Length: 218
Image (tube, rainbow, N blue to C red; front, side, top):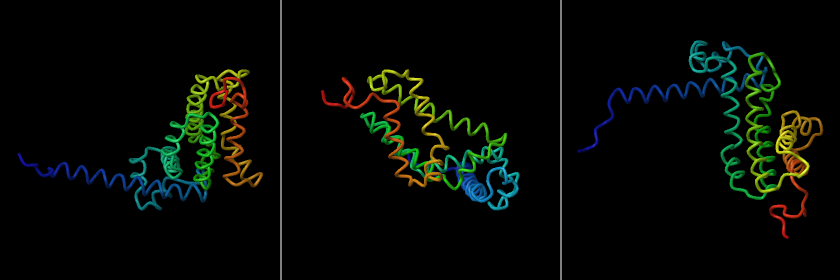
């Protein structure tokens, strides 16, 4: 039997989905520009809608709230920083120090890509607190998975519990540390990433040369 052409209903459905995706992309781009220029708290749904060329009702229908628009902006920033490639690199690397260096470089890449929108994370309005908490929880979960992996290989410092090691890594990889390094100290993103990778290794891994340390010659 020959292939049947797509039904008009299926075609209309696909067209609506494509139009909805374009509308969401336009709204996200408009919101990103406004968040960059006036911050999250200073931006209204009406202003986002006007810049995107849609009605405020369309913004609410597509996202539900300003905080959810902001979440879409953060997801877009992750794509800009090539999150998938960094996750793959971290997953396949076996040397704990190289894993931490890759995580440090990913952290630098993400914060650098999103730097114009960092006001999102600092405008701690009631609407934003939940999103910031979610971001912190995701970072802690990612670090927990890495530390558990290192602990299974005997690479975590013997004087630390896995939980303590996660705490140290979580504190070091926060936004404020990045801002203090790049803005307060004037470091480049590469200098920050190099320092972060080195410091993470010092804080959570057994020193180089320790007996039975993974990746070290016997």
